[in-house]
Length: 251
Image 1 (cartoon, rainbow, N blue to C red):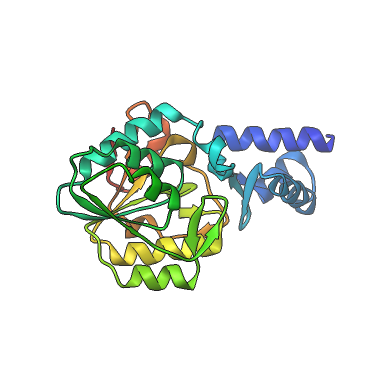
Image 2: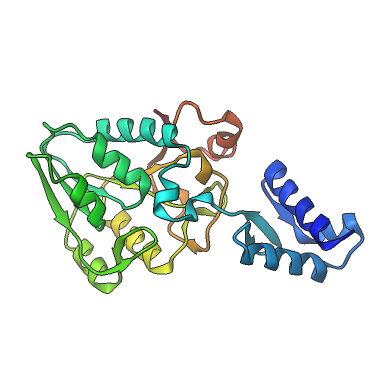
């Protein structure tokens, strides 16, 4: 079997089964594990999968640039954003993450809402400029350009001095075994810091993130209070999370 054929098979297995185990695939194809691992390394370097111990899992499509991410399952994100906006009550303090899903939430907030929105995203701050009754607390730090959010020690220090009623979290990977992941180590550290300061954490779970894994761990699913998904999300994507006892709300 040619290298291109093997790689195509690996990607097909990932799409159909949600994982590839290197030892099993090497036995099936009568090839060495080293050959399969080399294929996995090369596919990972192209951003087509995420390597894990013993094999690989689907890479998150949410690692594309921000303008591209805004177009991925846009209808799902709009539905999730409206439902998430409805969770916020007058008088609450809310952590609102960066990224395309969070921007959709900010745009869905009613103009009459009275709340404090804490964010490390300049885009969120700008989106809320026209909301007369929303007070914006902007966390500073070094800007991680992929998501246009502040990260680093300065950001974490600012977060640690605040408390919130709810955190609406965006991530790039949501996996029933590997938990919540994102593509940058410092961004992951900021998200963990926010989880510690929030009374409740809800994950904005558009379908391209479900079953996918990114390089940097944020927290396990046991450390959040639930996932918010669109009603149009295929049921098979949710089965592993329901089996694991994760709370799922639909929008």
